[in-house]
Image 1 (tube, one colour):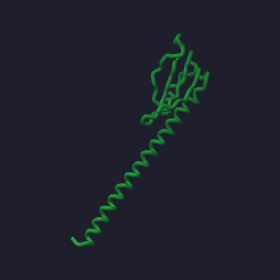
Image 2: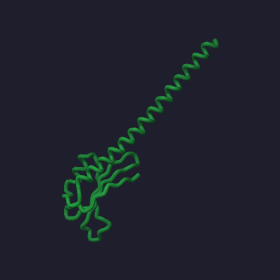
Image 3: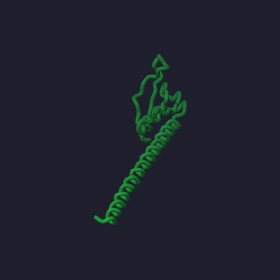
Image 4: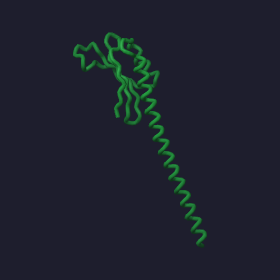
Length: 121
């Protein structure tokens, strides 16, 4: 093998390695961008749901509206702060990997008492 062929082979390998590295960086940037975008969408959905149910509003359509926005719902449960059991908590959330955005409403007699947007990572 002549010296010129070795140089060309080295250049081909170097170009191939640079191409693979560039594709890896592009994939990493795309993945980080997608995660950031999904996180913003999850936050917007949770905030939009909570904004639709201010204190005093009818809580009946909460689960239906959450599903329309693409949020997952948790089963309704009694509030820990109320031993009589007449106040329940309804929660809807969206998640990206381990980051989760929640919309939680406390309900009594079919009416919203409190509304809270929360983030858990």
